[in-house]
Length: 139
Image (cartoon, rainbow, N blue to C red):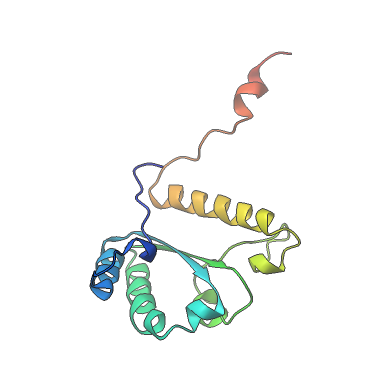
């Protein structure tokens, strides 16, 4: 989509200096989607290296950060005061993915919110509605 390149740490090859690679990728990235769990927030490496670098970029308006709350965890202490997390239910309240009756619906809502945020970040218009063409058509 719009030339966006996806990167995640699973792409680090054997024998690579993973610390240097992660730091390089964080420095060059403009969008961060953080799948947030207790394991993520409990990682010493994440807390000491990744999150501070990501949040510095966010605070300097150099990066869009979208936390996806996967399961209940202490995310509020990291994001709640200034970053909107997803997924949000029909009442506008954030609910972790695992707390939804249907995780696919939760992820679909998260994906839609992330897509909208990315388009907004780059100043791009939203895609046309798939129903727009049929609205003007006569039966």
